[in-house]
Image: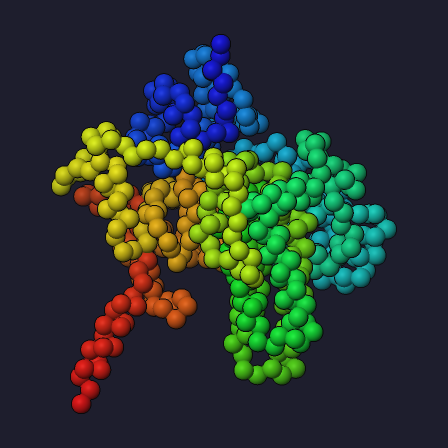
Length: 506
């Protein structure tokens, strides 16, 4: 009987079930598969197709070899089986940075004529034409438009060369154009044939599961709607409760956008919505801190409250339905696990998703026995449990990004700067909003080209001082092997020196 191998499962799970896979994958070019520590960390979030894409390995050869070894392949099969580059000029780095294969529900299924019409409306808005003139033509040609089609039109514009910043700037105008003309997938003539159920219904079904990430996010939106209404009516002029909107947006930015972009090549939310999240959060924070509530303040308030309401519509009509039909069960379980590390907001408490808890508990493995998989260093050796415990004891938040810009390690424990375990194996840039990404790229580029060896940033978080230090990691010959980020709460130092000053006072 053939051995069933699900390509959507993690390398960790597959090699645990079929240990012989370790040698097979090593022969195919997955050289790090023999490293026990790597399988027990990055391997828990890496699939074979994703690893092949990152390392530039011919997926056709992988499939052929696995079938030759007696495996029956199931799960998310790559659309084109990750063909090898045709030209010699393409570097391994370029191969690693290629986007992953399109998902089964690829956005490209939209009729070209319909797509071109939607893009033409967006281009007219971008050129400065009045909203109402464009809306009139739109209403004459469309009885309804599906939210996902709007996102696809925006994403297509970016592929055509329209700057991301321009699409992002007009995002609210786009929403105004299609306002009240959006329908769920069942109302659209272009229901994606590969999706058997309506996306909105699937999202609501998941939201009905106690403790599911979508359940929490929908409940937070319901609470947020009430707070926005109170702020609009003047019931709450402090805006203090609305400041928690940042926690809600961080969950999307850290846990949903990167999965869509990195695992499924759906980049619209991360390119557009993420930046809008940051703008809304910063504007609410600025208004809450302002002591003057003059006419200009009220104009700004009304504008940002409207933008926040529009964002709720974008989440519930676009983001969550797309996630519902795109994310795998294993990915949702990872989102659930990582979401537990985020503070509740708007009074919506954490709940237990029993199915995820059982799966995560079954996935946890007993500690590696002493001597098995020892890590030998120049100054001694560790077992994997010893090294893990040592790194977790260091009073710093530690991140290591390798020379190919891939997240390779986070130490465990509570963190001020959240690092979802699902981000392991992804490019570090996917973990940052569009506004921050260029800064991160510039720092790493400086490290690679030896222009700098470290960058230190001091910041205040919740009244506590933090030192964030980025350091180039080099081998004994000075070659760049990665970047380390260290985050340290410096409150202890502040208190120490303040006490010293008090003692010196006469």
